Length: 114
Length: 109
Image (cartoon, rainbow over all chains, first blue to last red; front, side, top):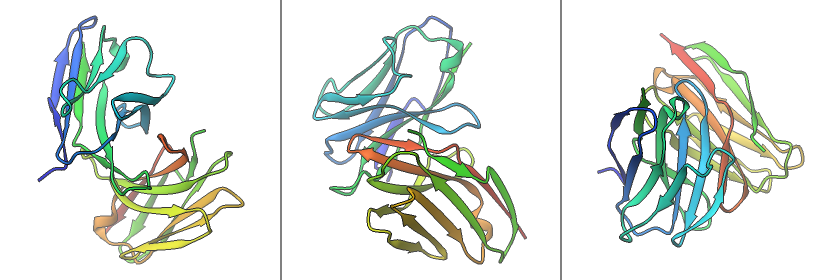
């Protein structure tokens, strides 16, 4: 059973459309992360989220991105107006071992912007 | 802030050894190693904390030289299952893990 479930597994959208990617951690954790991986490239940090607030964000995480934990369970990444270069695999991750930043990744959501 | 990995790619025959290096220009709190199989999410292998320790996972081990801000991952007697892309992740604070560009390892029979 996966510890972090992401939906959708694949989404195709038109440029300019809004996209919401969802992440459901099984256990009750406080630390969550979103990472992005453009095909064939490295895994890039987007944002970390602790206790329902953004802890840190990268330069990639500009005004078109937002994160929320609307119901205390689901953890969402919203991209307001998608661009072609947003096409990537988006991974949600939760912190594992207490006191160490070990990440458990979800299977990822592949976003294709046309 | 992103660590630098080398080499970019390595091809091995089963049973051969390889070393992957990871270095940072910043003082590090810890170094992580993850492996990603094609089409899958990265999977945690091991974490090395400050103190120059060495850890192992099956025949995969790693070292962390805190003074040089460097870590090396050692693949010993490689198996076909070791194929994948290996990422080192460096932790500078509690809220962010930055990954290197990855090293693609191909193990052939």
